[in-house]
Amino acid sequence: MPDGSKRLFATAGIASEARSKYRFLPSAALPPDLPDGPVPIADMANAFGVTHRTLHFYEEKGLISANRIGLMRVYGQDDVMRMAVITVCRETGMPIAVIQELMDELRNADSQETAEAMFREALQVRKRELTAEMSTLHRQLQQVGDLLDFDGSIEEPPLNDNQDSASLTPQERRCLELMAEGYSTQRIARALDLKHDETRDLEAGIILKFRANNRFQAIAKAVLLGIVQA
Image 1: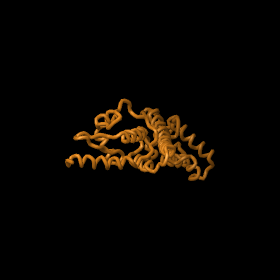
Image 2 (image 1 turned 180 degrees about the vertical axis):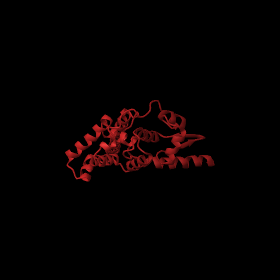
Image 3 (image 1 turned 90 degrees about the vertical axis):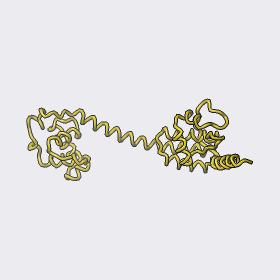
Image 4 (image 1 turned 45 degrees about the vertical axis):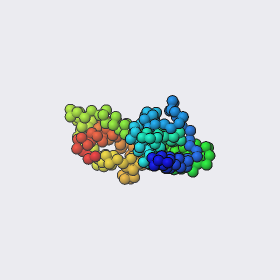
């Protein structure tokens, strides 16, 4: 047998051994019009909308493996199925390290139901992560919107009715400083030894004096006027 054929069979044996470790994989939509036999790398890349480099990267991470037919790099149907699962994970924003952990866990799946359950759990974890990120983004977006709504033109009086920073009482000034440091109303109440309702009224008075709509605008105006430092 020619040496080239021996190398081809050896490579195929290693790839088949790696793929055989996955007895069950979760259901994932497969691209249409893929051949039933070995899939050339160009067809694999086009089917999943990735580059050749991405496929090589997945091979380096042990997520898929390839054979060669002559000079052509090809993938088996089990690699196509794994690539479908990987694609779903990547579309949800899962990091490669997390996908590697999931695929390692799937090697131990002893039934289709177990594989599906593992996949659903990974998706649930990602859903919780995205929900937390959305909450943070929503809060930051609200703060940016509040700051953009604030008209910081120099013609606007710094406080209400041409008052200046001296119109703030020592307690209001201290409260404003804590607000600028990011203290919540509850923390300010503890720091100033006040009841929650008293602190809320104190904050409302400060916001009113700055002709602001909320605490973020009041802090922004105070910073611009040099009354407090952010």
